[in-house]
Image (cartoon, rainbow, N blue to C red):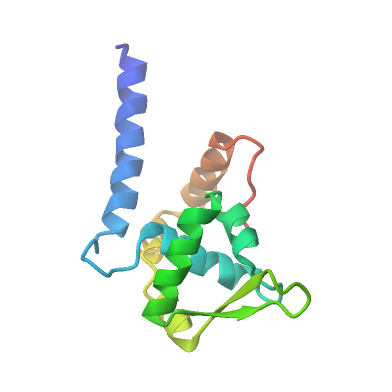
Length: 141
């Protein structure tokens, strides 16, 4: 393995560690990373009705695990489900007050606070570099 490969691997492992540390709560019944992603997706959708299919496409996961995660979030009291008035086959997923409160403790905020410790110019550069790593150049708003 070349020196460059070792440095790249070490960097990737640091990124993995940063994310793993953010999701430190792995106790039974705790909110999973997929469930957090779903809560964030619903919050981001704002006025758009969030169907389970839309959430699945947004988070990039197939329907079955998303449906299981939504049911678990419903048991937590974080989301509510209602049938779509325009298409009775669809279920609309909405955040409850509990869901909004839960998002205040979102583990991704741990990473956000760490990024805030960077100097502003380094934060901008870090964001630019991360965006380059994604095919299609995802833009973070």
